Image 1 (cartoon, rainbow, N blue to C red):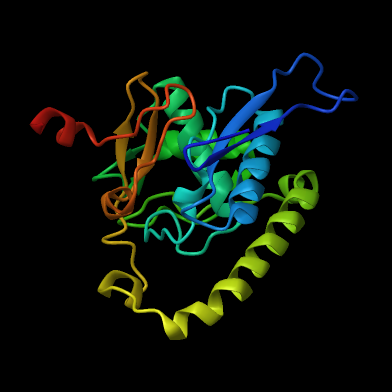
Image 2: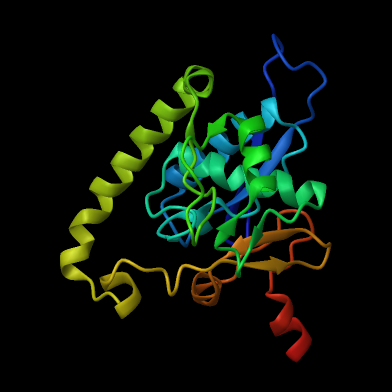
Length: 225
């Protein structure tokens, strides 16, 4: 099902496991990014939800493509996606898992990260805290098919877009490997759901909530308008 440039991706749990898990749907842009990678990101997120049902839906998988953050990671991968899922669970629980404009990841973040299969064996970083988490051996085994599928999609996406780089003009943020500062802030929609996003990414095009159909906006912008 497609609407206004978005295609609805619906995932339902296999009958053999997670009985009673409700079907989940994600809206993936068909105009802002290659839909194959966005769909694979939505599927990988759904795989995480199978084991952690309280994780909210990912409203706009395409918002993660091309986004980098010195606090949460520069390279898009399943490990990075699971990191984002930790923030999602924290938001669902009403837990403040970061400080310093989202850069410092505190011990509350680490506690949820460990629940989801991430580990931080080193001491906290002075500026980013416990941000640099890695997959545990158990999580690697659990999500191996998901990781391999997403890796193939990322590799294909990189190959497909590599040729465009030489022919396209890129702004200063893209040229220097930044997404416009890298600091993500909370954006909310009319029904109260929220996502973390770099302001410059949100400024490029609206990110629409799959629940209410309204765009996510940064609260300060809403208050000023």
